[in-house]
Image 1 (cartoon, helix red, strand yellow):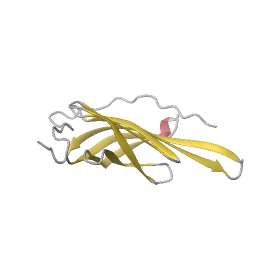
Image 2 (tube, one colour):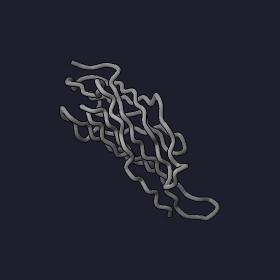
Image 3 (cartoon, rainbow, N blue to C red):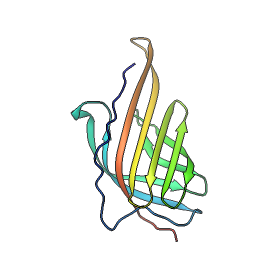
Amino acid sequence: MRRIATPLLALLLIAGHHARAADTKGIITLFCEGTVRSGPGPADVERVNERVIFVNLAEHTVTGFVTNAGSALIANIVHVCDTSVGFIGDSTSSVLGTIDRVTGATTVHTTTWARDKILGGKITRGLSYYLVCKAANRLR
């Protein structure tokens, strides 16, 4: 099983923009940019532009992330307050993340488990997103 390193990358803060919302009864649409890491090497980092994340506070879900295979992930919100949103999801893939509602800093780790048909065994693949998001709609 290959272990994937996920060192923290510097997050750029966008002055004047943040992902804070005071209402807990709606959907917050976030537009994000930053990087995604798929492995330990320098070539395993890609720039992310125009990533859209939906935070549905009424249904307690976060969507907008995918596995290495392109499958959509739905995470359950496990923590929400004035300053942050925490979420996790698990099935054949897992997702774990936080969104800072003040600065927009968003960190998300996804993991996918699969069977390697050639080598016969379980393999793990992961993606780590390091983003800065701003809300398209601010709930008040």
